[in-house]
Amino acid sequence: MAKINPIQLQKHLRGVDYPASKRDLVAAAERNGADEDMRAALNALPDEEYQTPADVSRALGDNGGGDDESPEGRGHRGHKDQDDRPERDGDRDEDAGINPIQLQKHLRGVDYPASKRALIEAAEHNGADENVRAALGRLSDEEYQKPSDVSRALGDLLGGDKDSR
Image (tube, rainbow, N blue to C red; front, side):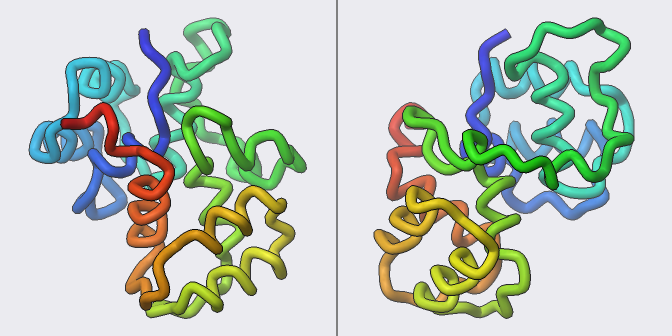
């Protein structure tokens, strides 16, 4: 199965109200124009409720986003502290852009709507590396209404729309 770009994943899950079932995720992806690889990846998820977009990304990572571990471990989200690992390399991927899970972790505590400056200050306060801060610095000077607006803007800025049209 093809590796799923996390920014594209969140773009195709736009409008999902969490918690969401696998059926809700697949329906949203279809509505938002997901390609066959994305729909197949979502259809392969365990049939359970996902509390956050990060849960979906983790489950997809377990299902084929990299490690080829045993099938018993797929979709397991019992380790809620997984996002708190000190993994600096996970902050970015040269080809895929900024990891949206790490991005939202670095933007923890932001009061929305938020200015570009507030986003950068929060990222610095939360220990974001230079690549994340630089990407935020390239955003347009506007107010962002919610976290997904920031992810979407970064996805557009970093070329996340190239293969979707």
